[in-house]
Image (cartoon, rainbow, N blue to C red):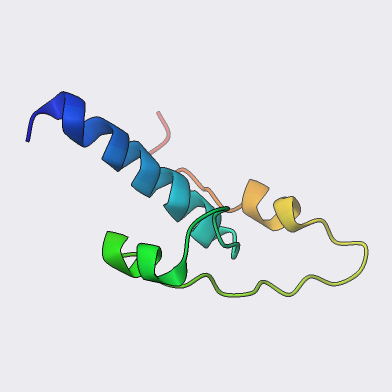
Length: 68
């Protein structure tokens, strides 16, 4: 398959993976679709009241490159 044909499928998979990483089901996607893409089912993320779901993910990345 050519790159032009593969690229939309790649971006769709990344779009779905982003939802799954947040513990959400992508809109319009079934569990069977996720399995066909090789993605796991989203896990429910329990949040306490007053805690925004984006707060934890905002601090999730830490650069591990050596400081210069």
